[in-house]
Image 1 (spheres, rainbow, N blue to C red):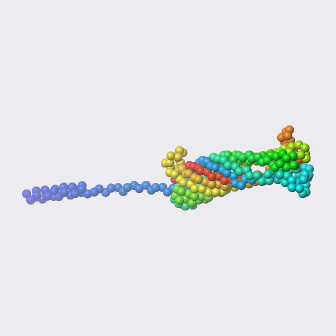
Image 2: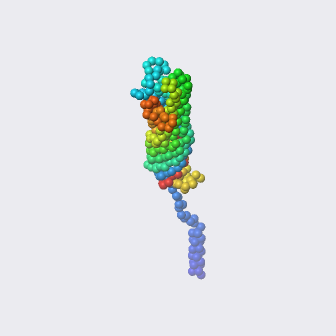
Length: 306
């Protein structure tokens, strides 16, 4: 009887222990934490841009060329010693200084590569190349005062200056505050420029009007510098049609200077339109300058590191 009671008590204690163990809280597995990657500007990118360009102090300077054989000696408009060219600017036939401002829209694309020294915030440097169409084309006409040397007839002068496309290859140096970056830039610039000048002289001394013309069209080089700001959107942006690692938006200003060029404006044969020898009826030299500013916005698609 005693043994039976002991066995029953032991069974009861065992069942109670099992029940107590079942009531204890279970040890849950630790949560998996995925670290959020730190954004870096390092990587290759390509994109598009659109903007507005305007010239900067674009002045055409014209002088009459001097020298033996330049033409018969005529008195100057304001008296004094004669000139050995029928084209001297003191005869007031041409505008010695003539402004030819230009403005227009631009549009094109760019490619580049950035390197960020420290992910998150830090220094970013890289290189970028771009090319864009430029709607810069201006034709201006100047009419001379009515003076005796040209029979009191206004001599017209027509100047045309254009740039069809413009491009750069520049270095970039900036500082990133995570997804926001401010930078400066500068380097090589080039453009397809064209200059032309057409003059008409109603010269009483020679008894007939003389036409003059000169033109130039070629690739001209120089430099560009400026700066901008850029912000990186996430890869899930609606603009990310190319599944890039990031999409960036930028606003940028550039000043470009492609230098100056002298254009010889010599007399022409009315029958053929070909130029005579410059000394036959004298000649002019018009100096054109290509310098201006570009303000644009752009979107870039970044590939490579996050």
